[in-house]
Image 1 (cartoon, helix red, strand yellow):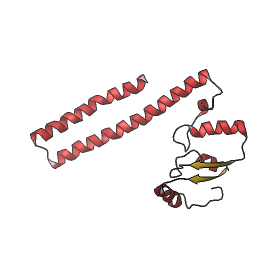
Image 2 (cartoon, rainbow, N blue to C red; image 1 turned 180 degrees about the horizontal axis):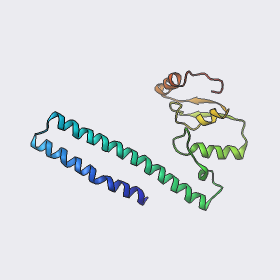
Image 3 (tube, rainbow, N blue to C red; image 1 turned 135 degrees about the vertical axis):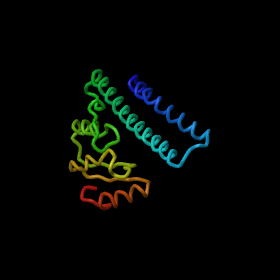
Image 4 (cartoon, rainbow, N blue to C red; image 1 turned 45 degrees about the vertical axis):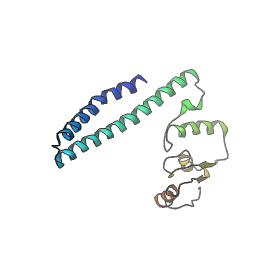
Length: 155
């Protein structure tokens, strides 16, 4: 995890610089509307960069974990992970498990989210049949409007 620490450490001077700029302007009460917008835009840009760094760090950490696991336990399905529609590497892990089991190609997913990032979307595209369940009306509405309905041949 040293790489994560190093990346975040590099971002710290930017955060401090923005904090100092904003603090000085507010203390002197000489902030014009334009200056405040510029500072807010800088903060927004920094937050965006931090989010990208955070996601990149998460993916790097996951890849490092997978490499270590594969070197110790090469047959572990978690070492075979990759992402298509899942949140992390569940698509690849499921594919490896299914390859070993030869299932009936039927699934049920609880807490399926909005249908775009879950563990069974990729299975649907491979001809599996299944049911998605979710407790959020917003997610169900997104599936209805964004994916074209609530009843499909395979879902």
